[in-house]
Length: 381
Image 1 (cartoon, one colour):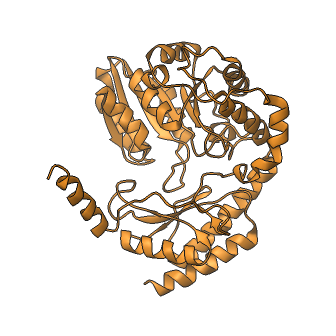
Image 2 (cartoon, one colour; image 1 turned 180 degrees about the horizontal axis):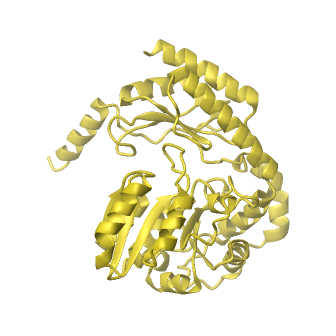
């Protein structure tokens, strides 16, 4: 009896086509993987650098065995943060994941007198941080700076500071924040601080792969910049770039930093090496941009609709969980792995297949996926 309520909820999810299960192991199955966030193809090429890694970091520890504030071995963490600081021009602080970073940073920075204005589609981790802090926050319409300005005009007078939160590249639609307009709003209002989550842009944009802010020449405009190491960087963890004052404040206030066992030094060492590889991958970034444009055009030809994506993340909108699941199954049978995205990750009616492209793909791969997808969509109307 005590577990019947949970059983009923799961039954309801299954009836709606929204029941999730951890997939079985697929490596080596010959599937074309369009699900992972390995945007630059580094994870698939990891074997190329194993000997180099052993030569550079042969004695690196596999566990920290303590939180960062208690760990005795700090050498590789310091080296990674120093690389980030030299690249971004400001101090950096490591976290265990992008989720840990956003939850910890947002909840820590919510001191009295702070209003948060978050784009409607920012990641759940940022919203969880706001809820954990009990913060005063409001949502502005996605990428609509007029909506943001209205909220600022109406609300900002009662606060000492206003944190405007966005992602540079949005993980579901693959579109981009209007960063130039947000920077202009910040310059107009001395209360405004700009918080940019670059999780899906680090490695993919910028001359050195530092993200969309670098690509646009706006690294100095983001007061708080969050990047992840588990996507294009093919490692694990995350980092926050901010002022010396904010870094010191986070070390003393971010609970996900203070109370978590630190990343394994081996992870930090691998991240340091992968960031160095990414910095020189301008050709691969250009190749990925070309593939993404070709695939978007293919999806638009199938649907007859403009696609919101401007990145390597390309959604195919389904409108129902059942159809998204059916098309995903059809693709897998054809050797293509592209999984359905359903509520609560997206709102009702926003169910989709999300394709995550990577620089290891070829034009032939893209054309094959488009052709297969067109046939399956026609069969499942």
